[in-house]
Image (cartoon, one colour):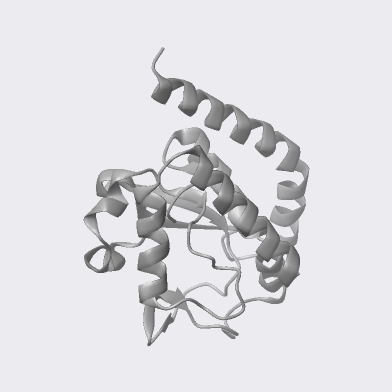
Length: 188
């Protein structure tokens, strides 16, 4: 068996295990979302682009009021505006603990994503990104330090992703994971 197939099986196996562990939490979130807004969808499914610019549906729990597209930071089109008043009360909790993102384990199981890699982008972001970014699988947790209180600028995002792609392998993935955990722990 090739290394790629083995890595894919391992990624999917770990994602299945985490999904089973999180299933009770997911059911509670679904019930709470339905109670809070009975007529709204529980899920936010959006087209994203991954390796070789292949489109796929990325899954998340809905954290914003429905019917209003996300606003973007004028200085950085990759970032959303902080303190967006469209985020629901329950959505703030889901975002604070990144629970809304956990449904992306399904994307890993489907083979659209892996655990650590550049975050999948929307179609409008593609022209701003280097082509090398699309040579690796997108990740559940990204190379860009999104948990920092100060949002990174475009040059910082570009440098972080270039470093990741240039040094692609288990060592940099481990460093990204450790940095992400440290930042999450520090900011909670």
